[in-house]
Amino acid sequence: MPIATLGVYAALVAWTGLLAYGARSGSWRPFLFFGIAFLLVLNIGYFVNGATASIASFISIYDLLDNLGVDPAVGAPALAACPDNACSTWSERYELHPSWGVAFYDRFANGDAMRTNLLYGHIGFNTAAFVLMHVQLFRPGYGAAKKGHGLIGKLTFAAVTLSVICACLLASQHGPVESYGGSWSTWGFYSMSAVVFGCICMGAVKARQGDMDGHRVWMIRFIGAMWGSFWLFRVMLFVLGPILREWDAAALLICIWFSAPLGVLIAEAIRRRLDRRIPARAAPVPGE
Image (tube, rainbow, N blue to C red; front, side):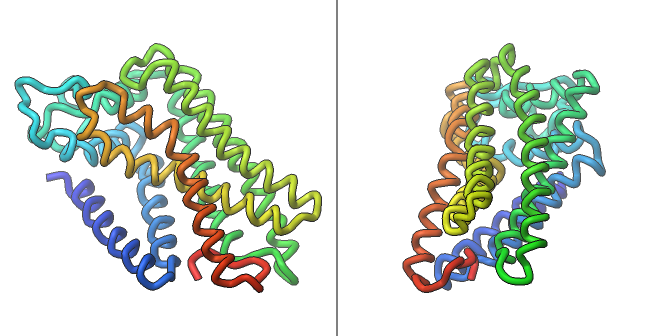
């Protein structure tokens, strides 16, 4: 049994409980902190275990639901096998995997070093940005914190920029990969990158203009885009994969195109709700 994959399932159950607690109590910090820690465990694994082993572990998360009710002898259009079943940690239990996962594994198991380095660059810089943006969220730049807030903001902007560059270079190679959705995948990741980078650019512009209210609004939208492109993307794929397995790449493309915009919309809805609850506060902090 893949212990790491079962651990992910247990973490998802616990995280769902924190989501319910946040919805009931209005305190979102436990949910947010758990999400940050969860992301760190998954992403640091790429540097500890290597790209191919971590990709296999990632694909294994989806194998259980994607194979639910599927006759292995018949399969489904969105499922495929990989050589020696190396792209999964389920051993012989599941020999069919999401086709995007098989392609994902193959591209880094048999790809060149530059592609792998771009993946490490994207993961590393994206992880740094994800952590730093929460430091900014919970420590607004007022009073004595203003100087440190500005410095961390510049570091976050640099990390996001480098992460987006790596992501776009990787996406530029997706055209021939039918299981990703071909050029639709390429332009989808360009769109995702534009949403993330556009939000943080608008936040930076507002800060330089001295519009702190506008800065706060756009940075909360940026945080939503980051949560959307990482966590909402993965959760949507977890749900849509089994539903849309009769159409190759359909679930993946929906997640690519819509996860970041949905993240922005969710963050905006939360911000407006908080502002209505605390109208006199200049900078309400999500999670409180």
